[in-house]
Amino acid sequence: MANALLSIQVIPKVDEKDLYSFVDEAIAVIEATNVKYKVHPLETTMEGELSELLQIVQKMNEKMSELGVPSVISQVKIAYRQEGITMDELVEKYQ
Image 1 (cartoon, rainbow, N blue to C red):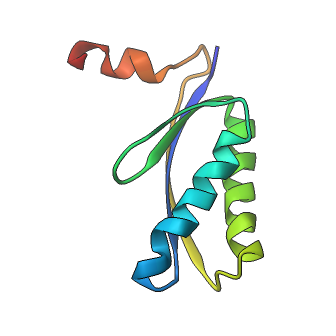
Image 2 (image 1 turned 90 degrees about the vertical axis):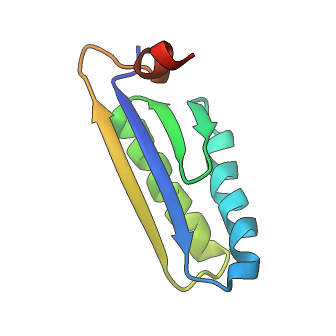
């Protein structure tokens, strides 16, 4: 079972008209992994082992650099529970 939830908002320093294409590239980094994730309007939440999720964050930032983004801000929130945590259990009463 996953021991962490990690929500990330990637904010590349680019013209606003180009912003979403870079966000799409950041999400593609997540898609290339085996972690469960959900895209929300202001952030994307991943579920997995904390060490793996942090590596994905690093790859997302590296991808922005590869694409020529001069600066990127990554806002990250982490929920960690050693015995396990899931997105579903946190929102089940709302579904």
